[in-house]
Image (tube, rainbow, N blue to C red; front, side):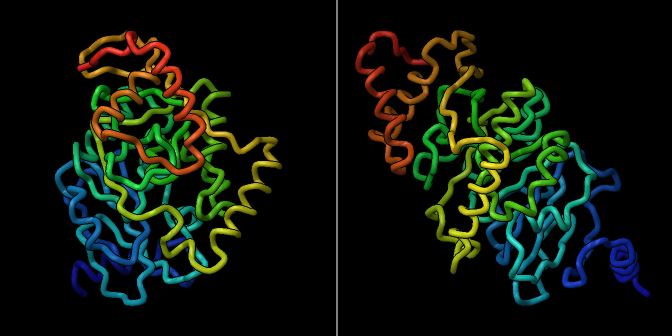
Length: 311
């Protein structure tokens, strides 16, 4: 029996997953396990090539739901999940062990355009973020304006982190994980964990030195086909009602680190939005964001003299 066959055999023996899942174990690039892991559920590994696996201190765990069994991207481990009943978060609940300190649960349609995934894990640890996320390039499809990249900041401390690419500390992962099966697409999880962070005194962040491009319109992926989106919305509303929460997204910026090194965070929301507008020549947002943007624009127009270049 070859070494690779032996590794696969031992992995299968120890697997605690549904019988439909199959694990193909690939040798680690080093003998020392990483503290960090990137988890992605995909049927097309070509999307992952620009993420820089092998160049940093993080593992890559691929949850493969393709119809073939020949998916072998460069990664730490592939877990087969051919069941069409699984989505992002229930797939993670079923397959991802509690072996790491930080978990980046990323969608497969994101392209890394600035910074490195190593930078994201390092910043999360340095700033002790409970949950944070990379920022999105200005040409991305974005659901929330505050997730767009601001060149004036190294990072921003915020009130809300979305489900597209959350980077969770181990404590946050353990806290949120029991709810993954109920909210398989993730709708409502971001509202819930953002509220949990506030009540527990934990920090949330957006990392402006790490930028991904989201090239697909929200709600158009495989998981939303058929009645998937409607079911997710119903599950979200039921969950939030049980948690005694309203669907409210906090758009506030609580602080951060300016590129210039300044620590003056007065009117930081105005500064960030002004920065975005100056880069893009105009900000296109989904309807849900429009009232907030209009409110901040009014504030910007009332006090234009207080908005200064930040670096």
